[in-house]
Length: 355
Image (cartoon, rainbow, N blue to C red; front, side, top):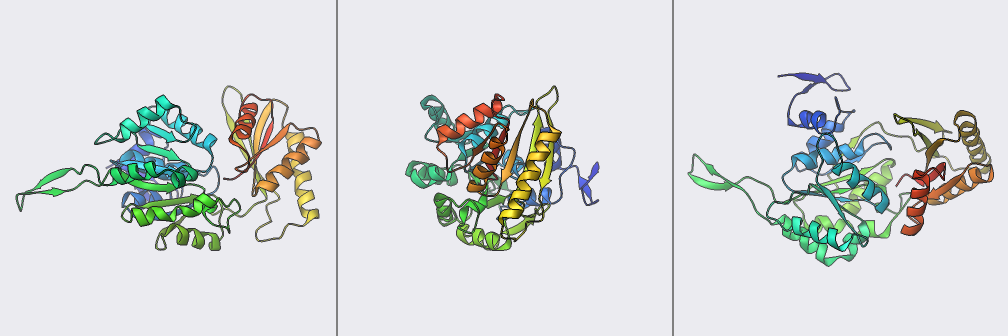
């Protein structure tokens, strides 16, 4: 059997998981602990994944979704990010991955097609994205999930007893809670409807839950596990990130896209921000952008709170950089306008929360 090396040097078996990683997602190997998180959820166990932004969190649930027989339900906070992920999955090369989302903005024709597929004995959709607000407000969606969970089981003949035995799981594969720090008031972007997601474990006790976030101290991890009712979930840390003031990710729109991620003022873990330290970090950020990148470069500054994203955007804008902010406190219309302006190059820098 062919083997590849994992990041920690252990040989990686050429099994179904590795082949899916290479042939469907185009990766030659896994990052540290990625495979462990994938294997845990495929074993139908709860898992908490802590991984910095850009570290490959999505693969931890997208790959298992492809290998699982049922539908993986992904709870994500921002509709624009949901739309981007679904589009990316459907257009994935070399093989598109069936994915869809349900929201108040889903067109009637598309909604009808998605629901029709989900009511099939074995749906073709592998990942269904929803917002926490949709889950909290839609009794029909909960009914659909209950139907998926008890739908069609496959059977095989037990040669020893000459009887048919159930061997396939229900059509509800798992729940994924992305940006899980939003679950708790200890998190930097608390969302009330996220706090209601513990109901999922009450309704579907046998369905595994995967919670993911980019940044969370231990008290947030413990609180998330408690709220989601997964106290015994395995905690899978993938390059634990220090709590930074912000990350700077600049993307070059040329023939080939290049991404550079720069840490600015990275000694802020468990430190109460004082005005002088914050001003120094903002000045460092402005100087870095101004000196390193031309006007044809657009980028994202990741901030830790909604207020910080607004403050950083205003600071940069007042100093001649076309910047705006993007966070969950804005209306969907405002967020879409910012996203479109950034994609069109009218805005050079978007200051966004990690969620």
